[in-house]
Length: 151
Image (cartoon, rainbow, N blue to C red; front, side):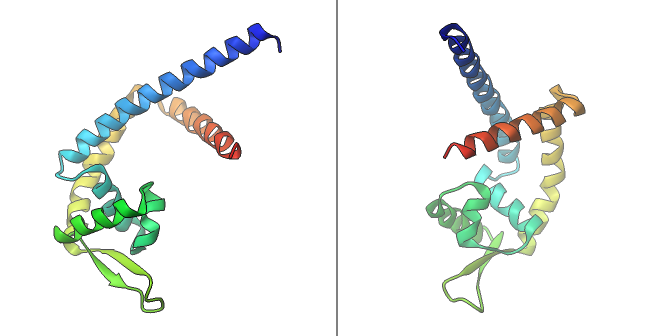
């Protein structure tokens, strides 16, 4: 590959990065607006949604699953516990582990807002047809795995 081809390839990669970043930002802003309209912030919603769909979780593991630092998770769990949406439960087998457990109030909240949230996400991605969504999923996975392999 000569210098001109390399420069063009570099420029195209940079343009893709900018377009992907801007699209991600707009999508994230719309999703955040939807979540906030239900009285939660995105992190609170992510934790409640995880517990609702996956069951009790070790607090130490929640951060990895919702992409948050462990210190932030403690703060979010404290806030959700204060709102009565989850509670802490010690692990009977390991005293170092504490589980976050969604309460009935938390289940009712998520059950009430998740269908509307799912519909909002569908509307946000309404600019693509199903085959375009499938292709994007495949390409973004490929890109993500490639970036991960570079570690």
